[in-house]
Image 1: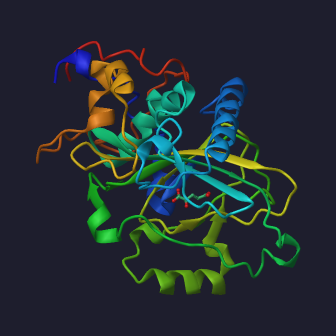
Image 2: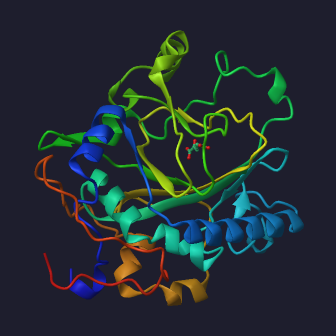
Length: 316
Ligand SMILES: O=C(O)CCC(=O)C(=O)O
């Protein structure tokens, strides 16, 4: 692949300890991936999108008239009063596109996928506590646990390290304390090829198996989709705002319902063609971490301007 078609992303993107954490638990929380200003910009864009989606009557996926969507985006559930789940948001605002194309996010996902990647979905959630929150107890709460891909199909090991073909970067744009509904996961379930219902039942019997994201704004939960996970229980009076990109190997399809407009497609630079369009080929261009103790690429990257990313200097 010519250098001008490859975005410059960190490799390895994770420190050895972060990589080990992800291998053991199926997730790692990476702090300070976005600055306070970057979080503020993204919150502004998501609140605007929420207002615009509401004004448009909350279009759903697979609407017969795609024009009813808002800049390609829709909501997952029209009726929820406290949980606003926005889907297919990749072209809804340039700052959201900048999050999807952020070199650190792309680099972290590529490291776990083990080669060239594409975006497969993009979402955001703005949620506040449930109207019945006072009747909900953290010690007995039942979460909406699920996994996005099963263990044997989604995973492989190379050089002693775990890889997965469906990875998400989930960044909290608001601070998450223990009562702010941070994502919960059943730690280590990404390696357990057992019926999810059994894993969930065991986690309710021993709740120390359930880990919850508690992290300052601008932290990214990097996780693999065989990991059983759910939205946490929110009982504070604060709003939680999170932004998510799903990534997969470049030869898998996009599975959202968004259709890129001709204007958006025209603005995609050569070095992001793969990220937005993938590549129809059986071949998988592998780039795997050779061993755990390789230090992380020390460079820092900004949210920046989505279609002005640097390309690699030379071919690998
Ligand atoms: O709301 C959350 O924290 C979890 C989101 C989620 O379940 C997902 O992206 O699959």
